[in-house]
Image (cartoon, rainbow, N blue to C red; front, side, top):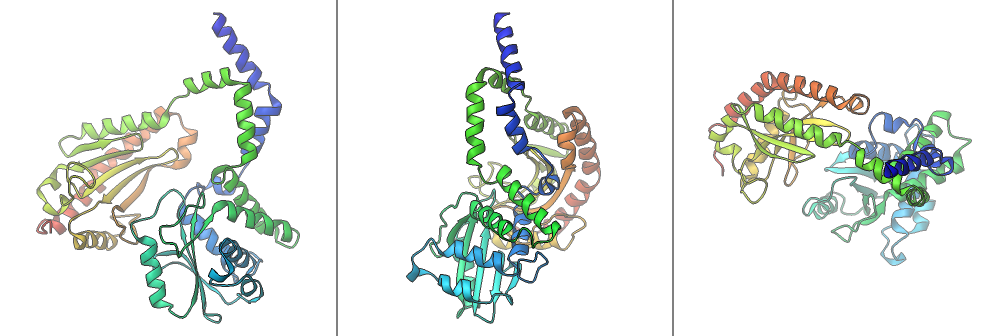
Length: 404
């Protein structure tokens, strides 16, 4: 009883702490358009917005100023004699004719200025890392295609990670945040209301989700030291909805033992394999030490992230690279059967079917029991519908194809 009273008093003190908890809630709270549409850590969406800001011809009203600031940020950290463009070149040249492209030559963002024979390439990594020799391959493509262009190659990551190829310049999202806040401050009054609001929302989203806010971290540490008893008790009582969903997903898969078999299950992924595909060599062409001990080269996967639950079909590593390419092309040729199919083949894992099992917005608003009901309903419809179609299509197309 004394311990219970002690904890109760600690929680009451926590709730009444306006200087500590109140400040944190104020900084983390409030409507944000990028958070509302679940684009906080979506790598492609960050690249889309970055391309929008870099394009001098877009409707943001900044002209080439963001492009200029970004270039200065990228090159100023290296010695002047090593810079592909001098700071003077960057500041004084007119980049208004620059063409900004997404996914050209598989590069996330590519800015090409034919007039000045110059290009900026950006490889953007939010939650993923480099694929093997990716930066080297991209650089070689650019050197071959744009041989006489001066090139600024940027490796953009959350924490300004060092690239594997020294020809790429490391830039972090903290730099992006700094550039946006600088431009917002300089042009705040001249920008249209919608653009100013969008830049403000994006900067605030970066501070809350991508770039560590040092002041907020120090405040959180101070609050924890002050209210350690209450916060430790609250943390111990917090249900792990993600783990509960994963355990339920494993149960769903196990119940379908006649058609599929569970390969492995973790908190974030549950993999399973159609029994029928065991007889197809092309579906079992992965060395046991490269993915799973089962040797399957295609796996269905329930991706159970904190903010989303998806059903995916993934091509894994294989001894036969042509086979992997054929599987991707086959899936791309049937977009209705394989929604969310990747546009390109990655070195190890390529997703060729990708769809939400539960709408992301429901995860924050519905109790876990309702989420389970929705998951089970979706899964049964999938197994009786799309699963059968995917199973038949893959079986028919690759039944006579060997492992190598």
